[in-house]
Length: 228
Image (tube, rainbow, N blue to C red):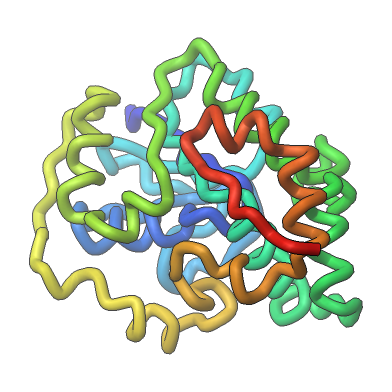
C-alpha cells in the first residue's frame, strides 16, 4: 500500500513547483485534495496510482494539518510575496475583476475565501502556525531555498521524512523557470524573491507587518522599512 505524504503550503508558495520537481526528479505523479486537470500531475487523490511507493497530496488546507498520521512537506514563503502572487492569480485564473491592490488587502487581512469548503478564509499567520507546530512528522521548506537549489534540497527533505525513495534524475537543466512559465504563466508567474517590493503598495506592506510580523520574524523574514 502506498504511503501518503502531504505537500502543504499557503497558496502561491511553491506547492506546484515542488510537485513539478517531484515528477521530474522522481518520476512520480502527485495528487491533490482539489479537482485539478490530470494532464501533467495526477488529479484528485481518489485517482491516485496506488503502485507508487509514496502518494504525495497537495493541500492548502489548515484542517489537514491535524491529520497527524500523515507526514508532510510544508513550504513557507515570505507572506508578502505570497499575497502579491495570490492576488494576481485570483485575477488571471479565477476571473476576479477587482483591482489587484484590493485583493492584496483582502489577503493580508485574512478576508480571502479559501478553496476548501471546510474553511472560510486564508490567513497567512494561522496557516503557518498550524502546519509548523503540528506534532506529526513535518519537514519545513522555505520557498526561497527551494527555488535556489531544488536538486539538492528536495532529496534531503525526502530523506528527513524517511520516505525511502531516491531521485532518478538530477540533471541541472531540470529547473528551467522560463519553460515552466511558458507552460502555465498563471501558476509560474514570476518566481522571484521580493516581488512585493515593486508590487505591494507601502500602506499594505505596513498593514501586513502589523498583522503578521510576529510569525514573519519567527520564520526568519525581515521587515523592510517603508515611508508612507
